[in-house]
Length: 119
Image (cartoon, rainbow, N blue to C red; front, side, top):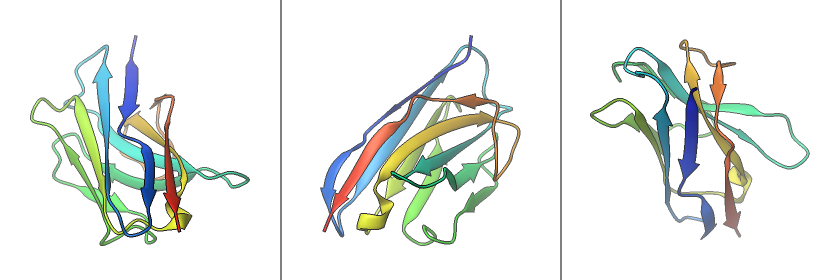
């Protein structure tokens, strides 16, 4: 059974940084793309970033380009999202995902971790 567990969320002031982590288990993830999505209160879930199985391809939402960096660990079953220059509008529940490379949907989802950016 595939399991994705996020960590690293919390409360930070605007302009600050957070690093989210995602630990994947249940199968070999080296061939799986992974990604981050987020959902703010009252809004639809939106794509944040994606990374291919090898780590050679990445994509970002325009709203986070230049501020967020997605990466994978050497074992390929961990993923990170370094978030810098955080803004109040980045406040959301952030979800880790895994599956075929996509900017819209994935097969596997974590439970989410809350990120709150205060102004």
